[in-house]
Image (cartoon, rainbow, N blue to C red; front, side, top):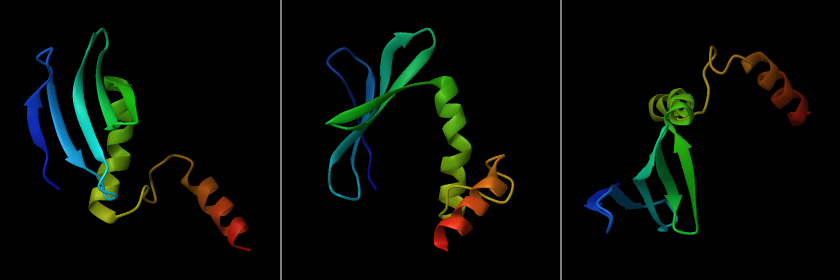
Length: 91
């Protein structure tokens, strides 16, 4: 995926890209500064995320990059619970 980096009219950094459905999406530095935030999503809906929220998402995203799934045997902390729920739903 190619990310095209540019500046907004207010001089904030923005990266534009297309998702798997060819929808125009972006990641952008927000004007909010306390705490710092980013905008992330597609044109119709973008999430306004703080550093703490992105920090919480990073392990999930890194696991997905490495393994193609959202959790490992040790992440998230309630993995056992989720596995049991998954097993019960399959029955």
